[in-house]
Length: 389
Image (tube, rainbow, N blue to C red; front, side, top):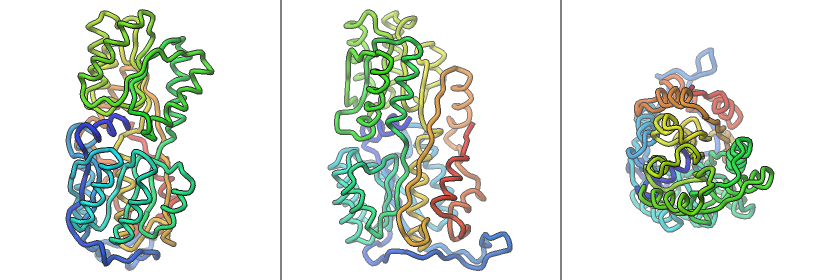
C-alpha cells in the first residue's frame, strides 16, 4: 500500500501538517532527559511536561483508510504530547516537496516529515531546516546517494528516517509470479526517477531474469482511476497471452479496482491476474473476484510515517531517539497476502479508520520523557515485534 499511499500523495496533492509554533530560535537537542523515574525505569505522568509544538506531515487525513488511521493516531499523539497535527496536502514532486517545506517553515512549525521523490531535494531541505531550526525526518524512504546521505546526517536537525527494502519487495513479487509460471506481465508504475518504484523495478528485473518473465507493456504516472482502466484495456488488447498486470506502484486512488473491473469487463478474469506491491483499499473484494492473487506491503502504510513523526516529536522535546542527537534509521518489514481469508482478516483489523497502532501505554513507550531507555535499537525491536494480524 505504500505506493498506493504515495499514489494518493500525488493525486490528492497530499501533506499532513502539524499546526503553528516557532522554529527559528530552536536549538538542536543532543541530550536525553525526563523527570523522576519510578522503580520500573519509566517516568511517572505527573513529572512529565511536554512543550507545545507544531509539526507538518505530507499526508491527507482522508482518501485512503490508512490516511484516516494516521489521523486517528495523530490525535492520540496530540493528547499525549501537548502538540497539534494538521493536514496540509502537497504535491509529491521535487518542487512540491520544497514548496511544502518552505510554506510550513514560514507557518512557524517546529518539525516536519517529508517523503522525497528523489535524493536531489535533500540538500536544500537540510539547509532550509537548519536555518529555521526545524527538526525533520524522512518517511517511507532511504537516502541512496552517499554524499547527500553524509551531508543530511551531519545536520543536528535531521532526526532520521524509516524505510522498507523496496528492491526485495520487487523481487519477492517477481519471484512469486515466476513460481506460478507467469511468463508475460505488464507493469503499472510511477514515472522514471521515483526512487521507490525505480528500486522496486530493480528487484523485479532480477526476478524476471531468474524466472524467464517478459515485461510486455508499461504504463506510468497515473493520476486517476481512468488512467488504469485505459492502460489495462491496452495491455489486454495487445497481449492475448498476458498472464498478469503487476502494480509496482500507483499514484492515483482506485487504480487497482479499475484494473480488476477492466479485466472482468474484457472477460479475461480466468487467465489474467493482478499482483501488487501495497495493499489496495478494497483488497478483500479484489481477492474475492479471483483477479487479485497476491499483494506485498507494510502492515499499514502509515505506520512508517507515524514512527518518523515520533522521532521528530522526541527531538523537539529535547529527548532525541539517540541520546547523542545523531539521526536514527529504522526499517519496516513487509509481508505477503495471497488468499481471500487473510485479506479479509487484514481488512477487518486495519480497515478500521479508528485502528490504533499503540494504546495509550504503548504510545508512552515511544516517548523518551516517559521511557528514557528508548533508543534506535529498542525502537527497532518494537517495530519488528509489531503485528497487526
